[in-house]
Image (cartoon, rainbow, N blue to C red; front, side, top):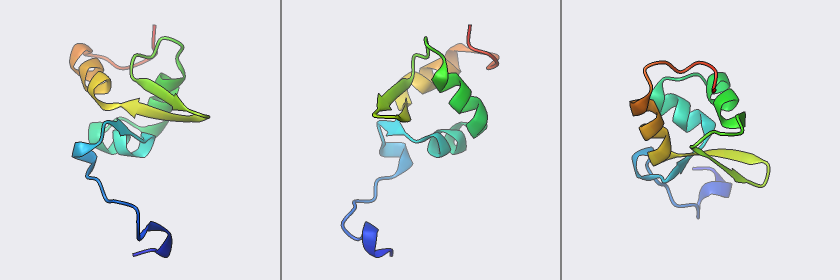
Length: 75
């Protein structure tokens, strides 16, 4: 284990409330570039910003995926 991560608790992706773009991409099989583009949209319902970092609100993202048959450009 890396020295910098020794004290950092390990949390499974399935237990996280918010996800990084790579985690959300792996979970959903949606590309990181597409996710980043969706997160940049002004009306994106599943983005949370922490400083300049964009994270994905897991429940809202899952709801968004369930409610859409097509994920292209955000309206």
